Image (cartoon, rainbow, N blue to C red; front, top):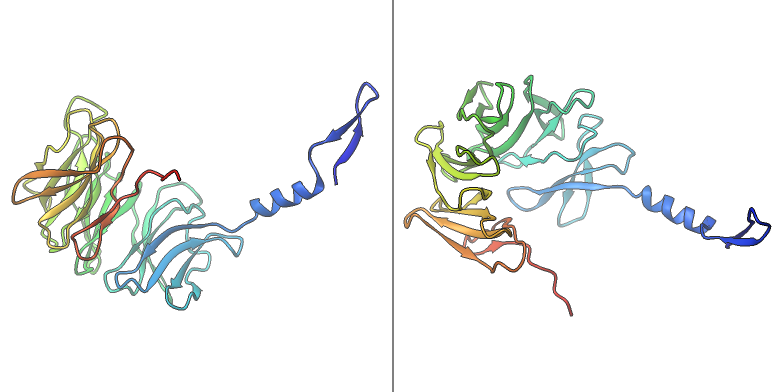
Length: 283
């Protein structure tokens, strides 16, 4: 019902805000939020953050049954913005946690029976990828100063610095055989520039793939299943474009046009196709 109120000049005016509208807006604001949905290696489950209890918690969804199971109990950060990674065996999930909201995230593993802190540093740390055997993690961290890539042995707890750049190295991806890593960094004088590099798993023999022009942002997205290709993104043409770098030919093939902003997501399981969001269709 619209409420009528007496204005300052003695005239009657309609108040545009109704009690029904207030109730609707409040109900919308109180809807629970899901974030960071991440599919398990076998595709049967999805890990996600969900705050239906009033607090951000990690849940796991059974794809077939639709059953949602809460794994955490106040263990995860209030910030649902940091990503999740499954271990290769699908038995646990790696997430980021910060102390009292200081945004200095550490790496934690969670399973149905509890949590285990794997990497606790003084700086900002972020999981980049998981080694193919699950025995090591590729992480990015600023605890040594600039944000660089490190290899963390899950069993021994030993952490080894893999890159040492003056500017941030990020978007790390481990090859399917665990022998190489791909990442992005900038060694040019143009501060807007990002290039895609590939190096041995220990960080040695880094090579700039030179897939975009200087001043553009190029990043690796995912290795192909056989390790002979790399899905990449680049904005040399001012809009994001999707490409596949072929190591045997030492060149990149671009897909789609330059009319719309596009960003590759991942290879399909057969490795013959890629998923990339396209422009909305107007009917």
